[in-house]
View 1: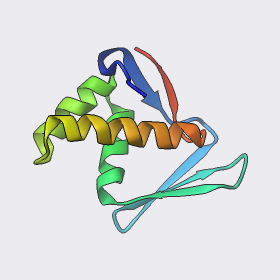
View 2 (view 1 turned 135 degrees about the horizontal axis):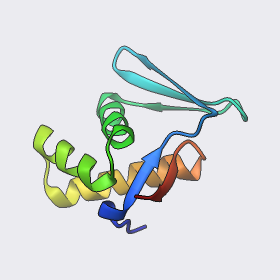
View 3 (view 1 turned 120 degrees about the vertical axis):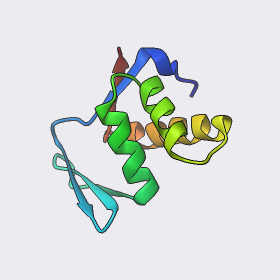
View 4 (view 1 turned 45 degrees about the vertical axis):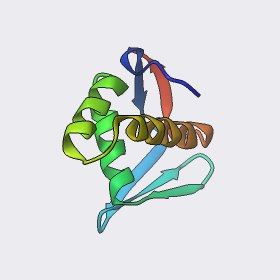
Length: 95
């Protein structure tokens, strides 16, 4: 999955409920009852992704915040987006 970060935005569907508990996020799909848990880094990434105008904007913010190689961050974000969207916990669209 190779996303065009500058032309992609992600959002949480209305049916997905999130709760942060001690730094981790639990996502609940209210339609299916399925849950997914993110650690503290995944929690931060999801927060920045869903509050940014594009994945590129989120990428730049996370790159400035974390000590990580740019290629690793690209791969990690693509993996997170793919993982959540394949479970219908994240909607991927154009900017």
